[in-house]
Length: 225
Image (cartoon, rainbow, N blue to C red; front, side, top):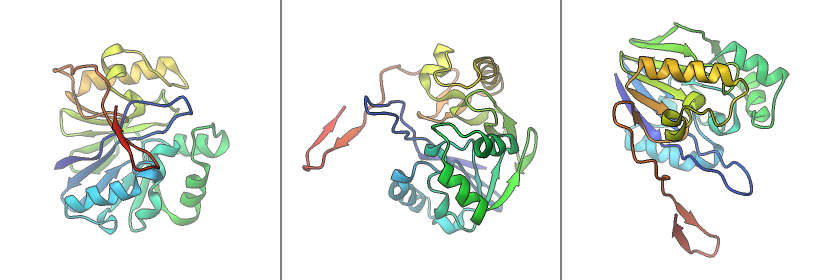
């Protein structure tokens, strides 16, 4: 099994609102080529370029596992027309029945009309040594993937380094469930792929300085912050 960070999320927002650069993780396991989340629509070019560096195109992806149905995690589903979509029924039911300001209603309609969907739950095997974890709190139906013995892809169950070592859920519909999910992740994994940061090693806390990024303005100027 090979795990690759295809897009690395960023832990920031602006005074104008939440941008939502989320992580996309590739899991290659025998005959299955799995994406865990597929990112915000504004990152589609970067997503395709990152797949190309791995010798892949969007048509090579066999499964897309959706952690939860917020806009920054499902925006690129139309790129993966050959893939089966895996998600939690709890997440689907909440998103279509009680959507909040972050749920991607358009993506839900796209899924309803166009996708081959499989609902998965705690303990379901996605591939050899890849199983589903139910990690509620950030949303009621968020799911992660346990890969091998020491790696968890957890999306926004732990959003970033600040949640990882600060033990403070920054955005949650159920704080107690978030705390329980975060504690479980820390207990069961060393290597953690959060929703909005680089891969985190639980045994090696990283510098808590903000992750830098390059701003590109319409007039052609650039500034790294």
